[in-house]
Amino acid sequence: MALPTRRGQRLELKTGSGSEVVWKALDDKGEEWFSANIDLMGFDVIKTTDEKVAANLREILVAACRENSDFLSKWKKYRVTTQLEFPRHWGLGSSATLINLISQWAEANPYMMYFNLESGSGYDIAASLADEPIFYTYTGEELNIVSAPFDPPFKKDLYFVPLGEKADSAEAVKAFLKKRTKKSDIQRASDLTEAFAGAKSLKNFNTLIEEHEQFIGQILGMPPVKERLFPDYPGAIKSLGAWGGDMILASGNGAFDAEAYFHDKGYDTVLSYDELIVG
Image 1 (cartoon, rainbow, N blue to C red):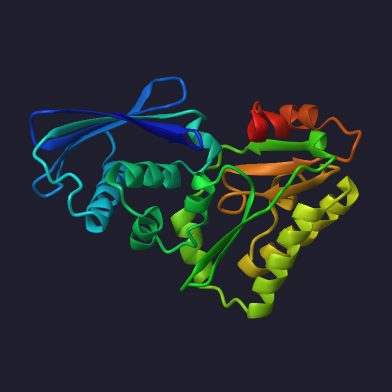
Image 2: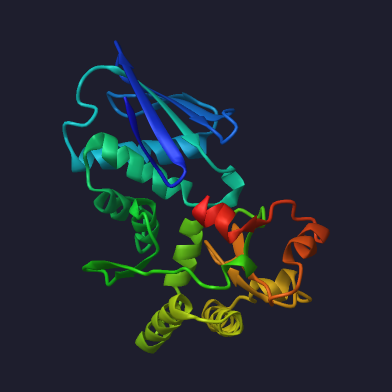
C-alpha cells in the first residue's frame, strides 16, 4: 500500500507474518539514512541505527494507537519505507510530514497526535496538509486555518537558502514558551504576517522583513540571522523554521545578484521562488 505523498515525503507499506514494525527511511537520493525494528507487544525498539530517531518514531506510533486502538492491533510484520523528496538538511518539516503520513495510515487525527507529542502550535501539521499558502491561528482551545493567497509580482527576487545549521524545533518552542509574551506582541506579529501576504512592492516587502526580524529578535533575545551571518547583504533576510537554523528567505533589491552573493559565501544551494514553491 502506498499512502499519498505529503509535502515532499511518501510512505509505502507491505505486510507479512510476524509481530513487529520494520522501518526503513530513505533520503531524496534513495539512500537509507535510518532503520529500526520495533516490537508490537510493548513497542520496544529491538534494533536501530539511531536510538534518538527510533525513540521519536516509537512515540509517534504509540500516539497513533492512542487515537485509533485498532491501529497495529493485528499480529503482522509491517514493512514500512519512507522517502524524502528534498534533502534532509533543508529543514522542510519532515517530522510533521511523518506524523501526517502515519495519521493517514492509522486513520487518526494528525492534530491530536501532534498535541499529544509536542508543545508547539501545530502549524507544521497544517502546512503539511495544505495545498496552498495559509494563515494559521491556534489559541490553545481552537485552531483556525484560512487561505492566504501569495503570488507577489516580485517573486523573481525571492530566494531560499538552506543554512545547514539544523535547528531543534522542539527545543526552540521550549525556549519561546519561557518568554513572557504580551497579547499586543501576538497581535503585532499577526498584523505583520497579513502585511507580508499583501505586499505589492519589493521595497515594502523588504521593510516588513526587517521590521519582523527586529521584533522577533527582541522577543527571543537573539540577533537576526542577517546581523549574525550576512551583515553586508544589500537586500532583506528572513529567518524560517526555528528562527534561523534551517533555511532563510532572501529578498533581493531588484538588481543585485543574490545567487552569486550566497555562492561566494559558501552556500551551494540557492533556490528560486519558483524552484521551491512552484516546482
